[in-house]
Length: 337
Image (cartoon, rainbow, N blue to C red; front, side, top):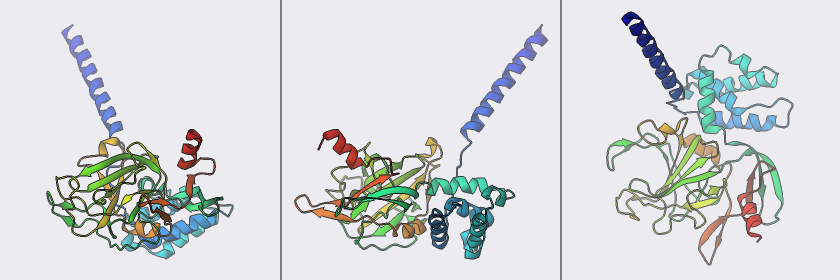
């Protein structure tokens, strides 16, 4: 009898261990590390191939192309050759399937998911309405915007990973755009405002999550006293291209509203989130935005200033996909204005 009980207990224990292991493996089944160093030339060429193909029978997905190159180079775009990109684009145009082209690439699926997390919200159909004529125009292309408003100058260089020492020694996990105080800051991608307020490192800052929850955009060191656009609040949906705040030099202080940064600039970054456990803590994934920022300069949001309030607003309107209303239209419908 004792043997039977022992055997039963052993079986139950093994089953419990298996359930724990299976549960743990499911919980851990997500990407934990991404190094996005796709160069500008590859981004631009792949994007142009995607956009041009929309007029053709065979459509090309730029992320498929970039993931192929990532798998080919092991993620090292120092090995990049335009001829490699042109070759895979030509194969796709000739009717070959990306599944067949990449069937022997062990890590293609990883790069497709990783690069997709970065770029999935970038290209697609959207509508823009110019303020001057009020006509909606449907387009296919970049539906994300430069973080600095059109006509406002800024400079930048690849400073991702540079050393920072305030508070503690650490790597710089964002991208700095040097611009004058008061320069309008633009929402790169449509999404929901998750956080806005003071942080001793970033000063006045805004965090916006993309609609698919994979990308978290961080905008920091905003202007002293009036850092945010008055229309902004936590939980609000913003459209790509909207004015969300203003460049400043706040931060590097535990005292709220302190100008602790020597030179005015926008610190912005993109965090990838494959699992909510990665949102805060040692497992955060931030990517180098230098090449992406250069690409975003192809699509800048025009703004105008209201003299009475000294606030900037986007010049026109924006809507994702032809069937969706813009945020402005939704508010007008609700209020009856």
